[in-house]
Length: 175
Length: 177
Picture: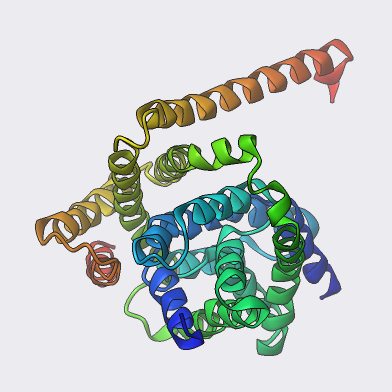
């Protein structure tokens, strides 16, 4: 893959997706794995690392794929392409906000429904790929994912409850 | 000014996941440690969510632009990106040592479903937080139906449908409000 092709792929993956990096995940499979540019195992590893390490996922994914394909040059140029044009567009939109026929704050409502559809699309694609024969426990994985979230939420509530009881016992009600 | 750079650095070191998750980190840090108004943060969030590409750097850049000037946008973004670049370079250098680890392999194999669940959860939480009145509910449902029709009705497999859907949604939302 040449540098130009790589930068164009960065744009294709990131600049057509609303709602953040987690929704770009299926496109890494589409543009890198299905075209045999990067093995599936590598992309899975990068996705895992980008989620378990601190920092924004989009930076991790672009940097890892850039490093894998073209070394440090690919990584730095990929990041420049990732941030500079869209930041300039955002600033332009902000500058011309007064000329828009609506209040700029309503834009917050715009992305939600599209994000919801994109998320559904992603969940469906994961569900489809995970029930293929090579992923015997894919369905279990999806259930496990949902249960993990529920479990984490429950643990959080229990911790908060214990903290409140502890604070109350120490006279926290007067605070 | 230095405080903003420090906050961005801290957000990058402490925040996990993707943009939608970072919004809460950014709100929390900026309202606690700076005098930046909620209005500034709201405008930055609205634009960042409405445009494609990563949310958090755009949002931090817009906050820096509103509070200072155009040239401060770039240090603000760089301080946010820098810690991640260091981590990427370090982990990539030592990647060969742990990439064949059995536990890491299993974790990677089953990570996509977990991520799908996390994504669905984020959308549900965001939607519930933002849909409290009838108008807001309409603003959510109508564009969603339009987007579904565009995506599945025409069976567009390419992710370009987001842009078409985005334009139509802006028109619908602007007309309703």
